[in-house]
Image (tube, rainbow, N blue to C red; front, side, top):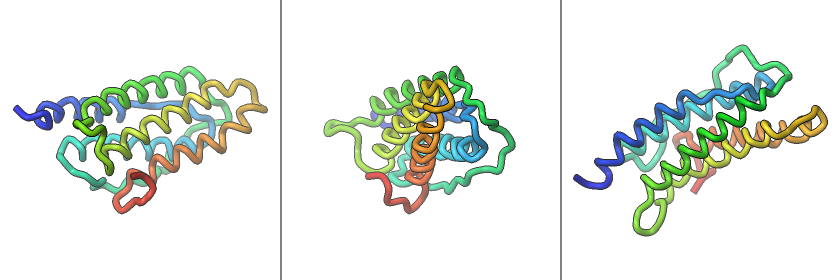
Length: 157
């Protein structure tokens, strides 16, 4: 059985794991963009399992209620840890003899890391002064991850 065929079930399990990620990020806009980025990551992992080299599904930020002004540090840290674990396993599954191929594979691994970093920054923000400084940067990172995994995107590799 080829390496690709053995990676398919593992990539699909990673997609399922990513689709369950949730974090209380504080504001509605970031909350909705995070949901879209998570959806895009799950679709990207399924696309990779299907052998695609480019994203096939356009995802949009839902209009979800939620997110107050409070960042729930524990949920952000847990989501970041989950995404880092998926990033590590996806990188291993997708790496070939010359590393991770450019395109959807490298964009997905990169987006997992960037999103995990943004969530970790929110988790470690602490007080309101630091949170005001971290939140815009984290929100931009979340939006970038979502955009780079859309069909026709030129943001990634």
